[in-house]
Length: 130
Image (cartoon, rainbow, N blue to C red; front, side, top):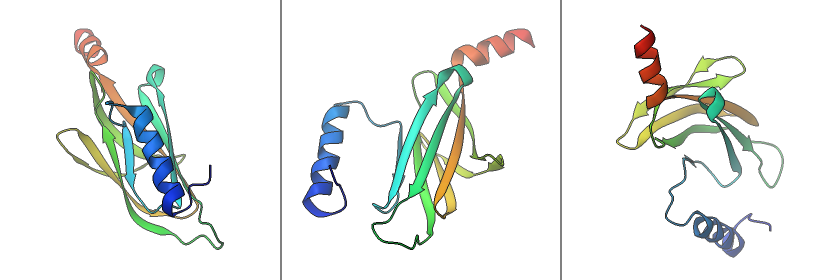
């Protein structure tokens, strides 16, 4: 299904929201349609890894500035930090009532973010060891 623009894009987005049902997405981005966001939760490492791909219909790739990525708190988890992989460069964040907003200053063709979180269970066991 090509979701480039117009009715195709609207249908694609509506289908995704329909599949989500009442569950809000854990991560969203305020970015142009040419930016694809994919995220994988890795609970065994207490992190989420997000990839952003700038994939315009026509070349060349034009960098996109100031992409805001909304990351929601999940049940029993508190977001700790967001870094750019593989260099571990910190990404600016601001707290909200539902999570954090990370701002990627500039996206060329590709960026990968590591979103680290702590669960209440992990924080309790850390406190018990101290």
